[in-house]
Length: 213
Ligand SMILES: [Fe+2]
Ligand SMILES: [Fe+2]
Image (cartoon, rainbow, N blue to C red; front, side, top):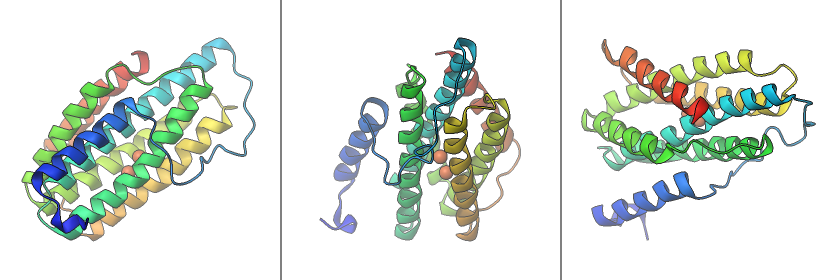
């Protein structure tokens, strides 16, 4: 069926399926993990726990990215914007799968609260879309730039020898830079104060909780 002929109910059902796949399924990456050819590092128990905590935060961040993009795509005004959002969301699926794989390698698991993060992020994405495509794309620009800065911080905080986690985050960071640039090029506008600050605050809450839970 052509995407253009989907009814709102079709879209709703497809969205629910993607939500379930994100929080309870095993999303598959289209690209191989950047960690693929790297040797596993020697990590003591504390380092392993710390790396797992950071990767759990990044996994949850990617759950949020799926939900944001999906909420935004569902209510995008323009078909080209919707297609663009869906394409970027596909790359976020790679990030999600790579983080899930790395978490497993570190003998850990995703955040128990992922369904909650997904629901909240979907609502925020939908609200951004309701403000119109230029604001919605501006929201992508701001989100991706904040994620890029956050990933730089995690690259500092990961155990130095954990090359596999580092490779995943470095590739994600490069993708997020491109996502921000593309959304800007498509007409994303700067978000007014205090929205960027509120976004930073809500991601700080998520990061603090997901590190542990
Ligand atoms: Fe991502
Ligand atoms: Fe991204």
